[in-house]
Structure formats: structure tokens, C-alpha cells
Amino acid sequence: MKKILTFILALTLILSVAACSNTKATSSNVTIDSLTLGKDYTDLAASIKVLTSKTDFTDTVMTDYVKEFQKEYPNIEITYEAITNYSQTITTRLTTPDWGDICMIPGDVDKPAFSTYFISLGDLTKLSEKYIFLNDKSFDGQVYGIPSKNNVQGIVYNKAVFTAAGITTMPKTPAEFIADLQMIKDNTTAIPLYTNFAAGWTMGAWDAYVGGTSDGDAKYMNQILPHASNPFADRGDGTGPYAVYSVLYDAVKNKLIEQDPTTTDWEGCRAMINGGQIGTMVLGSWAVSQMQQAGPNPNDIGYMPFPISVNGKQYASAGSDYCYGINVNSSKDNQIASMLYVKWLTEVSNFAYDQGGIPEVKDAALPPILETFKGIEFVANDPALPGEETLLGDINTESEVAINNNNDRVASIVSEAFKGGKTLTQITDGWNAKWTAAQESLGVTINK
View (tube, rainbow, N blue to C red):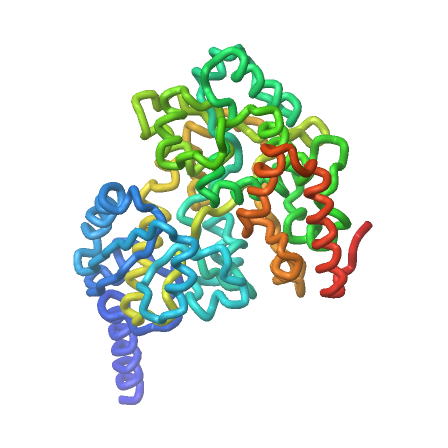
């Protein structure tokens, strides 16, 4: 009798767990890797809201994705809210608990604060077996954001303009690139380098080339830079942060940009480069599909490595775009519904590939636009050393240099070069002084 009772209890437990896994979400230990799409929670009923920066996709691409997802999860309703000034608006929205269920995690949320706003999607080591580039939105061994796609840092260019200018090989150094821009100016009517200065946020995009692209070292950003002595100084060999910013400074100084940077038009520039009115724009690979779709000449849009070589070899920084985060204050049903949708977007939708990015799933095929990167080594930033997880952010804040978080600092390069003011060395000397003062204030060991 005792054996029969034990068997009945065990069977009851198994059946209840099975039922729970396919109906109402009650477990607080569900992780994104524990879910099987099309099998788990297929009759879960939930209504979730997604906040996104993709203002041009919500009524087209995303609507189609929702319809496809609902073929397997018909009772999960999904609404999108597109936010124009996303990076400025979302940080304020996060201060209220009912902002929605899924958002693209803003860059100014410090790592220790991830758990305040977002649920853990799983263990970093475990999820890294399947996904790439998880470090940026992970803390203390937990993953709080899954990349929507992953970008390679290079330069968008118009192939027809390059051909008309007489450019036959891709530049590999800052000097070669400036020479090519001069050829575009001399031999075509196109703007050699369009800065997109007036948009503001596009200036901060230049910081993304510091690290992997400029040094070829995955340890540079999070382990070397915080301890570096005068990291923005000219090394004299065309590498490092100074070399990145020299491309922008020299292009402006030599009048290889638009006539008046204050009048640039982000919305209009996409059609302009598609139509051959612009030669190059320094933006991540996420921008390629937008330029291709902006006019009748998608095949004229190409993507090239940033022109820096380290000991004769080129590298390309690569890493996550906006990452999906799930509201820690959402109901358990909504959290699991959100995890299912994020997993579907990541593994099934083909969004990353279609947008010219590196898919999040390991060993997935690269999009055709990255064919020019054959032989170029992709470099993803290594995480900070143990105990220094917030060090780079602390120095960034204390110094107000705020690399990867400050559009005005890079914009000052354009302003000074355009008016013939400070030299680039004078500008970077100021950054170095602030960086050093912050290191000393925080008691950071400076490696000479």
C-alpha cells in the first residue's frame, strides 16, 4: 500500500509539472535556454508590450514577425511602441515599474543595476554555449539582455562612387582613406564623407571603433583602457583611439565632408548615399540595410573595414546592438511570454541576418554584405577583470570623457576642425588630463 501511495504521489507531481509547463507560468526559475519553442507554454495567454527604437519597422517587419510568432502562440498578444528619441526617453520610462514588458536596454544602465530593472535570462556560462556577445548585458554571472543582432564596425560606402573616383582597393590606413576621400572630391560630385553631425547621436558612433578595430585586442576596452596612461595620445603608428579620431578630424580639416555640418539630415542621407550623392558614412553594419532600402540602387551600397592596420593586419570590432531586456516587475505569465518571443526573435525570425548583422546564435551564416570582411578578424570585448566590473564606467563618469556615452565630446572634433580651432592633439590632451585625474581620484593603478 505504501509503495502504491508513493507511486500515486510521484505521478501526480509529474503530471502537475507537465501541465504547468504548458499552461499557466508559475515557476520563477524559467530561463530562456530551458524553453523549447512550439512545445512549451503553447496555450499561455498573455498580453505584452515591446518598447523599441525601430520607428521604421513597427508597422511592417515587426507586424509580420508577430503574425508568424502567433502561429505557435496564438494567445500571446504583442503590441509595439516605437520611441523616436529612444536613448533619452527610455531611461526615464524605466523609473516607473509599468513601462511595458520588453525593451531595448539603454546603454546608460550600469551593470550592477541590471537586476533592478530586468529579470535574469539565465546563467552566462550556460547561455554562452549557444549565444554570442552576451558580456555587455551580463553581470555577476547572469545574463540580463539578449542581443537583437550583432554589429560589425566598418564604413558604409557607395560602390559606384568609388568606381567613378578611381578607387580600386580598400584603404587599410587612415592616410590611405583620406587620400581616397580626396579622390572622391576631385573626380565626382559626391560628398566624400558625410558626418551626420546635426543628428548628434551619430557622433558617438565613432567611439565604437576604439578597442578591437584600433588595437586588435579583445582585452583593450575593459581591461587595458581603465589602467592606460594617456590612452588618447598619438602613438605615431596609425593605431589606437587617436588614429580613429584622426580620420574624422582630417576629413573635416581638409573639407572632405558636407559644406555645412550643422545642416546634415539623417533621414535624407539614406536616399543620398543610395543615389550616389555620398561616398562614405562611418556607421555600424546595422545601417547597411537602411541605406539599401532607401532608393533604387541597393546593389551600390557596400560595407568596408575601418582603415586601421595593426602590424599589417586589420581587425573589426564586433558586438551587440540593442539587447532585449524583460521587465522585472511584469507578471510571471508576461515574463515567460516575453522570453518566448525574445527566443523566437533571436532564433527563428532571421531579423539579424536580414538587417546585415551577425546572428546571435553561434555559427549562424553571415549576411552577404559582410563578404568584404573576409580575412578580417572580428574582435569582441572581453569582460572586465574580477573586481573591476564597474571600473571603466566609474572612470568614464568621474572624468566626464564618457567614451561610448558622450556624443558632444566627439562632436567637438568636427567643430574645432571645421573652424580651424584646436588641433586634434590639443583636444585629446584635454581628454587625457581628465582621464588621468579620474584614475588618480579613484585610486586606479596606471600602467605606463
